[in-house]
Amino acid sequence: MHPRITLTIALKDLKSALRDGRILLALFLPLGLGLLYNVVMPESQKPKATVALSSVDVTALSESLKTVAGSAVALSFKSSADASGVRSLVDSKKADVGLVVPAGFDEDLAAGRAPTLVVIKPRTGASFGADYITASLDAALRAMAGQHAPATVSVQTTAPAGTDISSVMAVIGVRKYMVLGTLIMLIAMIAIYILPILLTEEYEKKTVDALLLIGSQADVVAGKALVGVAYVAVSVPLLLIVTRIPVSNPPLFAAAIFAVTITLLGFGLLMGALVRTIAQLNTWSSLPLLLVIMPVFLIALGLPSWVQLIQDATPGSQAMRLLVDSASGTTIYGNWLVGFGVLAAWAAAGYALLIRTMSRREA
Image (tube, rainbow, N blue to C red; front, side):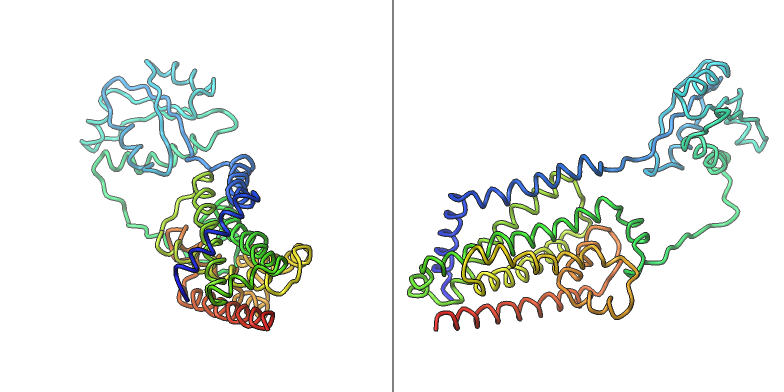
């Protein structure tokens, strides 16, 4: 394979795609999908709680509550001169809950005395904020009094094994799961809808013979695949930026995107070499696209073992497992080597069939 010839073929195809407007599809498709997700599934925000606080003296109660809440809940405090003002804020729903702190509260706590803290909640329809503050008061007051908890509670969760969709959604969220699935769908559309046209056109216009005079079949395949890689390199970051999806393990994410891209590009080009016209390509390309996308959105369902075994052997399923692990910040599925091995096996089979098909067409 000759790198210079490969690059020449890739640049020629990029110019052709830009002239025909196909490259614009790679730009506008992720933008449209990202904007759709932002409207239909807006990013979930941190829970909020507003506390009305009345205290005769300076108290550390608010800071202690913030420490207990950490980054899980956004707390805000509204000061009031007396208990009636606190009650008014709660009644008017300007605060979720009210706290009336008596004089000498912090000193009494430190001395081991038991001062009375008044908590004012709505008569009906108590909000999440009211329930959260009420539940957090014990830990906050213990911290202020310098008391240790009676026991250390260690909460552990079992990692979902890929058979419970509620467990997967609980870890990464529905929105992130759908965006990751859309990433693979986007790569599949580039590989199976956009890229094969470049190769089918070469055969339809009889220009592939001229390419094979200056390079080998491997040069032609590499040049076309390089165009697909360029499409993906533009589209995937755009979708991530528009949807604002964080990636916890960037190396794993990049490796998974690259592996599934190379794999699907091989089968997309195989489609382009098998058909005779672009019309045939448009007719038959929906089937392989469906076979790639279906396992992506089914990996978290509790399917029968024999169906799960078949699904685990598909490139879409393994790519989605790798992307979920890379975006979740924890290992949900694991077996990354198996995932990359399955993708590599599919890629080797796809490119071998592609070269064989091109050789037979040339003959």
